[in-house]
Length: 265
Length: 265
Image (cartoon, rainbow over all chains, first blue to last red; front, top):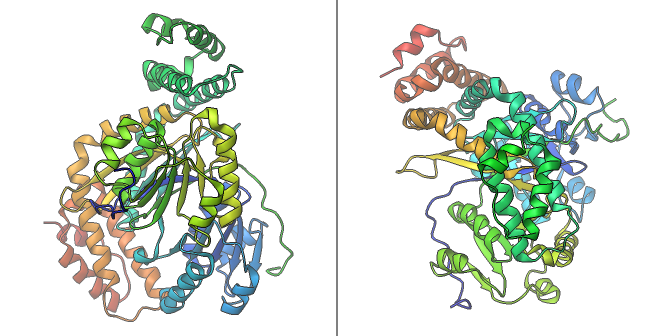
């Protein structure tokens, strides 16, 4: 039964899958430098991605906010060219290829899409602005909750309409942002404590069997749920690690409400 | 200035970038078939991805919920093997490679990570469960708002802790879900109307210059903002398209509140 011949999965639906990408130091190709490219750069630059921008024409806003500030790793100030593209990067693909040419260049956008798919393989991720059918992924309306001190430790929240109505997604994002605003500092403090707890427990020197991992996951999950969004910020991480070590040696039981309460500062 | 030598982007921070992936019909490789693989499959199968599962051992839950139902495109019921992996897919990569082996196999997980990065190029997306440093992307806690009739037209919402505290992200997702629950049918109806409006306007036969696209985007944005989350569900799409056509020919002005009010059913 396990070795049954492959059968195509039933297309129950075609939901998109949200994934949060780490792009620090990775290559991203952006073709076009108008208003859509500007919105792309606003999202890309804070990730630390190394952006190659191909465009002979550059909008004043892209020039001022990104090129003049040295935030774009490389600017090829020419129209996109097939032969040069083939020579530029014959072996390796990009983490993302973003095409943001004006709609009057629709055929060129489609040719560029086909070129990168052919050149780097079907798995090369490409997004053609304003053409939902030529997008391997969609951008969403994002909300970043980040500590000022450690901006890399952020909770990201993304609302995506799958190319349907991005501005409506942005309104929903704004609504959620307003709801979360009064809780933000509590949320971030709780997130920081639970991240520390998780990293500390993962780093414990005890040899872990597959079963121990299951126990660790259940334990952290249980403690997180018991604390909830409001109380997590008051977690004493060192005491929690101690409690985990004690119960790990023993019966692998999960702490009760009284033990959880003793972990609070 | 545009031709300045490339300079590395300053790593202001390393925020992750949320992207919603269309995976229908695309190849995804999943190595391991335990409890983590089960959570991955719960996310992957509704996207229509073609999952290849490599694992000699399969958990009862994965067997029951996915293999027995024929939802996995291909099951290789053997341990992962370097030579076979190289022979299996010598040219093309996968849209995603997900490694979910027990932590006792940590070195093997790292070897597999290196193999796919080397074999398919740095841009091959890989996620090693429970190893944040070996993840090109993180999974979030997702919320899908979807019409029952047209599940592919969904708003996805994803909360991601960047590998820090996924269960805390899930609690935040649950909180947002509870907040949105009373609004859900209104939100979905509004989303459907605005998606229809946007598609109808994009499909208008008038030749569009770059400037017209700017106008179209400003117009849809303006109408969306003017309607807001609550009123969008009452939009008469045909009347709105008519209004857009009229103003497109004229002075490219944006409709006022009175004109917007006349678009409501």
